[in-house]
Image 1 (spheres, helix red, strand yellow):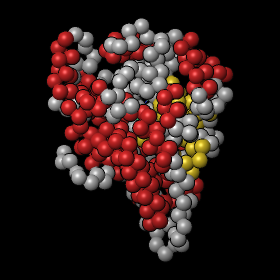
Image 2 (image 1 turned 135 degrees about the vertical axis):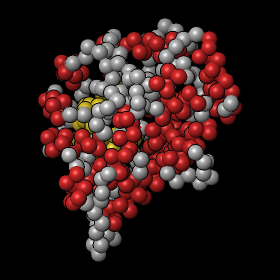
Image 3 (image 1 turned 135 degrees about the horizontal axis):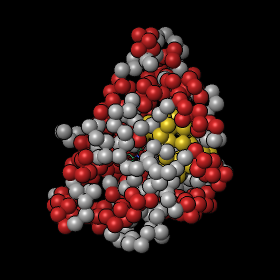
Length: 390
Ligand SMILES: Cc1cc2nc3c(=O)[nH]c(=O)nc-3n(C[C@H](O)[C@H](O)[C@H](O)COP(=O)(O)O)c2cc1C
């Protein structure tokens, strides 16, 4: 991967991130589950969606603004929750939240982020969205919800596709799932090869703990022990009844993230969620499931009139964002691209990436002859592609 002096695309930022981060962190971000088929399909299947060009339409005023979960946005895009993002740049979640606010898009803080909610909220005037995993200890869940609400969060992104963490072989190869001295030495050698990261993040970015959970965990300083505790807290026995319990506790917008089929989308509606994210966790959970580009249209058709349907997975440009809207999504979330931009070029890099996608979306709208986001629909798809869409 060559390192561009003037990055233009998500892939350019990925190359910059690779040059700055230790190898185990690059693979933690880039990797997917098992053979990574779904990871690849997520990206490739957007490319299979052909767009329809229109000419000589009045596109003098094109507006990319939209509303996501009741929040006005400069474009229909939000930064997805990414665990451990604070290992990718100094106080990474704070930088990302500031960049998101500057460009007018929501930032979602992961339960397993490095920076705690208070720190992120203090750095911005627009409250972030908060992502929650169901933990075995429901007392902790309740406390997190109360804290999120008190801090001003009004959108809860509840992730439903992680009863257990997926098989991520890249992480295994770096010894991330094994304790002991040897894996630590392997990672230390990789870290020493990245002195800039060591100085800025490993030293300058401390404390490197799971900020939202640090009050709950006995051995806060040992990140390995911490990860072990978090992994043991994922609760595979969660059902729709628990979502109803959650619904009763959360007065704000409830968004379920990780729905990939019509039946589950209907259940999401039934339990009172206002929004859902069509997602396979960026290809990090069940390898072999269909890409989100493939599943989106049928879910929109089934429940799109009654619930806000967002999508994530493999969206790599403003043009992909336009494709998602044309397939019926109200907006998209992005994961890896924002982390690459932040890790590779800091807060300014992330601002530049979002601004570039906004320009690209505006360009796509202009060339497709549509001036408002709400008017983007399947009429902007090429007819051949529409037939190919399942
Ligand atoms: C490194 C990494 C960590 C992630 N951590 C979380 C998390 O803590 N919570 C969550 O709901 N999703 C998490 N996700 C999934 C993202 O929120 C999102 O669904 C996915 O990244 C979208 O795909 P994309 O990376 O191709 O844009 C993570 C994804 C990545 C790549």
